[in-house]
Structures are given as structure tokens and as C-alpha cells.
Image (cartoon, rainbow, N blue to C red; front, side):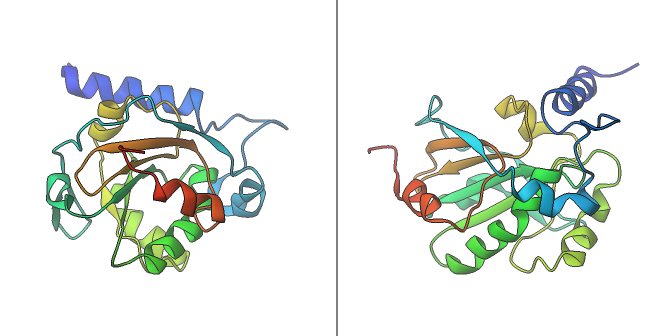
Length: 193
């Protein structure tokens, strides 16, 4: 019998598949991640949501494939960009190089945190990033989709920006070019703006 938490993870996973990155067959199918980065990069558009502005950074703990832990609450003190993604999601994969560049360019002033929502084989996330030349993003795992449930995510990728005090500034739902001028303006926002 499924526990309540397992059932919620299952429902959320199905919802994301249906509402966000889909795997339809036929001409309308979303290209698969391994061959879709170029196609999806043309579709890196999403929407910004400020309806949760001021919400506090949740206190979740994540692990990487090697077992190293990270607590979100420990990140207070500088802004943090939390990106929920999956290896099977073409827009997620398409935006990875720009997230990697953002992490490199703003290493001392912003923490870019990518948290995989892969349910199948989360231990392969580190290998997946390495194969794509991603050097500045760590392979954090959320195999139970606890953070996606907390944020009520319906579409991947979803990215949440917190200021240095741990207050949510905005959420970006859908793919985005994180290396463009619009991103700089978005990251200049604070809760008090």
C-alpha cells in the first residue's frame, strides 16, 4: 500500500508529465532530451510569478549521488536560485548551459542550485551533467519530489529566486535563457522592490 507521501509524489510526477514536459508520441511529441537541446532552446520561454513574494526559504535537506548533504536553510546570507529540473525534460536540458554560465559568472554573489526531480535513476544525474559539460552545477537529488510538492510545481523547469534573507522574490515557470540581459534585471529584484 502506498503511503500518503508516496502517493503525493506519484500524483505530482504524473501531473508534471501531463502538464509540463510531455512525452507524447507522434508529430506533436516533445523532442527527447538527448536530441532536443537545440530544438528546445528555441522554446526557452516561460512566465514569471511573483504571487508568493516574501515566502520564507523552506527547510529541506538534499543529497548528491555521493551522499553529501545540503540544507536549504544553510544558504541564507546570499541570494539563491533553486532550479527544479529533470533529465527527461527537453527545456530543462536546454537551459542547463545558461544556468551553468550564470553559476560561474556570479559564483561569489549567487548560489545556483539545480535539484533533479528524476524518479527513476537519480544516481545518474551527476553523469548526465558531466556528459553535457556542466561544470558549475552540482547534482542535487530530490527523488521523492518533496520540494516540487512544497512548491506545487506543475511544469518543469521551475526556478525560484530567494534574496539574501531567504525571502522568495519570484518564480520562473518554464525554460529561460539565464545568460541574457533580462536575467540580470530579474536578479536585481528584491522583496522590497
